[in-house]
Image 1 (cartoon, rainbow, N blue to C red):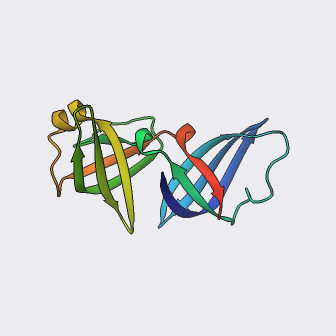
Image 2: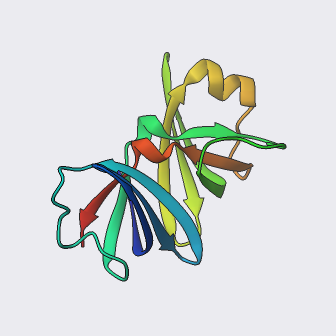
Length: 133
């Protein structure tokens, strides 16, 4: 599980759906949460939270250009590659964090990933969870 420490800076709500913006080291991340009608007391602007997402939810891109709907984008450097026959674990450096991505080995080969490569890690807002810090 990937975990980044951040501060909630904005919350939009429509019924039981929350779109929460969190600042992590001066970069905004978004989490789309489905809550009951009563919101947790720790989901408030100004609160410190852990931004968490699974390794399997981190997509990778090289030379990405144009617009894309994914709200969470991290410019990273490839630190380590653990190749398997079907899946590969890519260890990334994002600012002061280590972020891991698990993608198919076919995708890793198609991207021609190598240690030191600059990549963009992408996570959909609905795949991000928040945990009380």
